[in-house]
Length: 174
Image 1 (cartoon, one colour):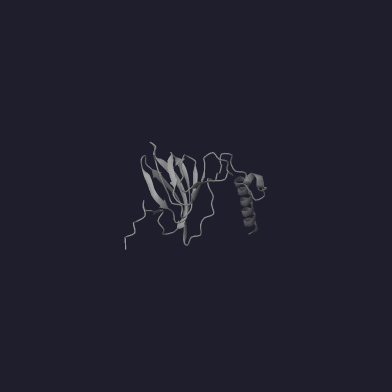
Image 2 (cartoon, rainbow, N blue to C red; image 1 turned 120 degrees about the vertical axis):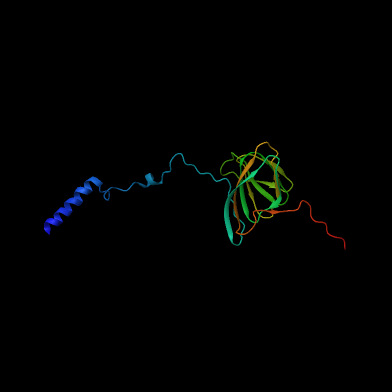
């Protein structure tokens, strides 16, 4: 029995020499673990305090607007942040104000308001923050598609946009 135990101990020691016992190595320093690779960067395009909504759903989407196409007058049921990924988009605010930051602005630069009645041309890298009540529309007057990345926090079952009639309905005469 003693001989059997000695053999088992020798096998464990012998195998441990080839496999390598790593339980006694010093752990890596915090600097080694926490330093990200130099190829990795992170940039926040827009940040907003979202409006309070019941049953929220967070989404990330991509909208493509073909040359000559437009997005009719609409508003959103929650907070939306959009960044133009490609192309130039003509964008008009009709009510409220939408916040905009141009591409290349410093990461801590403030957003500029686009007020009701104003139209701007948005380019790749420009970012918007839209809230409920901001009625707006857009169109692509260019020759290439416009791509817009959208981060949204809307009610779970709500449509992505609520379209608004071009003109208010006439009230029938009494």
